[in-house]
Length: 287
Length: 338
Image (cartoon, rainbow over all chains, first blue to last red; front, side):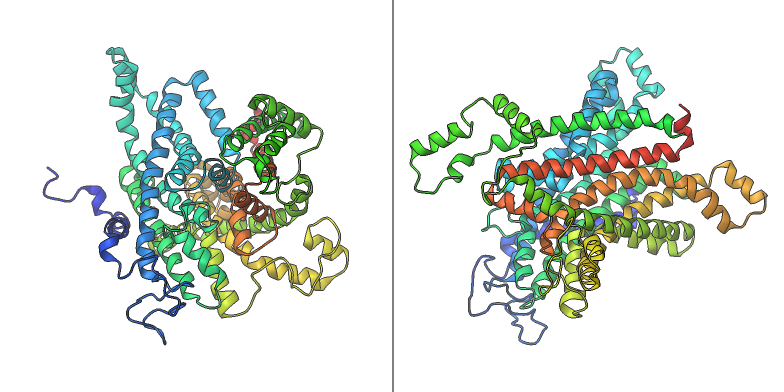
């Protein structure tokens, strides 16, 4: 049936825009070694603070100029996409896994289990996310894997909170009761009846969480508590450029644009998916 | 009316205190399983292994973790939060010196976020169903994609570096001295009758506060818009129209009042986030508040500071939530009846 036309979610302009941006950045991340004009860590102390090539004094070999150590900004941006995308994908999937499992358990079983999980979320939410991730990074040490772990440990509550209330509604539907009466086990009821009903919400939340993960990684690498100094990351580039803001404001502009486009892409995708997948929202939109 | 609400608020406060205990224990665990050794850090690098061992015993680090926590807790309950390893000053004095700056920053940002959010929400609602809706909605997602630290950097580039309109480092011009007082610079300057200090402090706060305010306003806008849309389906709006009230009066006197409640409870969460957002904004603007203290401590692995600053953030967020929840109860007659 749907083989002839694109699926409905792909016909939303927002989804297409978001997906295009995400795919471009993902492509840069995946094929970084093939795309970069220079080694991102190669220094050239005679060519520091070069402006972009279209500015006066620019050099065509360094399209977006060089930083305080004469490293090529474009190459660093492209390699920075790796850290951003790795964190976005793995941190949001990890946070989803923990948050969703707890949300299904809390929403489905209710009662004391629900109350206990609710209290845990309350405790977590009493911390500003940035502060908690900073503390965790001090606790578990820097490095890509730990950044991902820290974001997972901070952001699972976002999934748990939103999904739990959705599960609460779905779990009281007649067809769920019917499944139980037919003799479905708890496991089968949750996986066959409840998970499919909440899947659109889950997909949307993952997409939005990816944007959040990019921001958190940028924040952590800005304060020097993310990946090691040898790995180029957008937040690091901003921190470096902030020190030399009068020497080369350009160095600040490009990583800002990179972070913005990544987050914008994920948000567009998430918002588009929310509109096309979530029936309730589409209905209120129509009125 | 208030007396009906008080028990509920009391229960909230009790829950907050409980959460605080749990958080302090969690913080303690996270910060004490880490690989750095505070005993070795507080001694000169030439210290021998035996000296470090002695110091560990002196600091109580050889005891089991639950014992260590109870000892720490009993000190805390006596008002002793320990001394910073790096600054060699009592941690509480460091936090007391920086907290007012952060509260001042956050408070001004909250006002900006609330004003922008409500005005923006009304605009979003006003253009619903028109052609402009699409463009403005698109714009609001764009705004949502710019976190506070990117706004900060934008503003620094445009208003600081390119236009030279506003300062973007610290709290005051370097030739002015901090007045003695509470640490709330704006209030202190006014009390001392120093208009120059007041204006300088205000000029230093414009960029960071707008960065925070703008970053947190889009969510408020969008929630206000959707709750206004919900409210407009209610019968009383229909009734008001039948009574011949002007659209403007219906919106401002009838709909906004009711649509504001869901927005208010969202604002509570948002302001908690905003308070956390001050952390990075302070670092970017070299603004001497809690955030800069925290980041410095994180870089130096200065555990006593991290512990107390973490708790301080937590206390402020819980306080904001309690205040917003109480307001919600006071403003919402439906909840009061029960």
